[in-house]
Length: 397
Image (tube, rainbow, N blue to C red; front, side):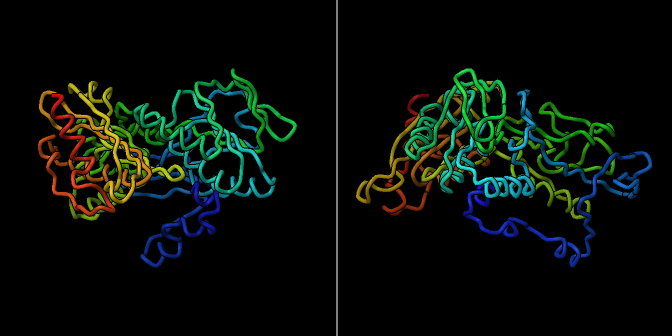
């Protein structure tokens, strides 16, 4: 959606995975603009707008997530937007064009905030990010996040760290964002301060919630209620490294959960074995990716973590240098890999994908240090940064 707003993707229809017509051709009835007001679980029906009651034998809750709305005065003013779905993206793009917006203020420097900063800047719009922490993308180590900050500044994005937004007021040129470090004018304010699972309907019918606040499910995607499944951003997922049920609101996980639920409902049993927490995003020319646990998460999961950060190149020295940083985290007691983070001008996502497979397979540093990886100078040195990081960390244990 950020790439649609930034006009890299010209037509929003390209973002629609399946049209109503496609559903209909497959024998699936789909109703748009239909709000479910309540669920009568004992009687097995849902009550929709217009007092329509739709009976069910099996119910699937795919409620998604809702934006976290900060308690800031003026947060609902016209020109203040959240980005959760395609309708939001269309509204934001329409506002940018209709009002001929030249300046946008983004609250938050997580995935959505950073992707939107890139998209807007590439569209010629001045961007300021106001962030409560010192560095962007809190999940990454500060040493890696500082590389992201370096790219932001080089690309002309104003990044204001450790700032508290007090109020969004009317300004001379649209809106005025008031903070403890000064005021910023903007034609549009994007609130990108995170999301939480939408569990309102699930809670109303007594479906159990997990510790993460999302709907508790088993490996078949079944909830605590007979004949009720939950999938996507509203549901928990098993983390194979921490061995805990967590909430990871990512599209690829939602797709897998939906397929698993469909298989089980259709009589072809299947389990979803969980995730290792792999995720990535692009920030201008920088690839950013991470997987597994951070040190704090590792401690909370009962591990004894040790880590190292290695800086190298995504290519062999003979092909020039393309800066790449990799952080590797392992358990000191067993040498088992626990997590990894990477940022680089090239090759960060591919390295994290390799290490995600290693996490899924519960590999240790000895095994990773001698992995058989495809070698050619344009794609990396003979001893890849993955090898070097694993061998370095092994010597520290």
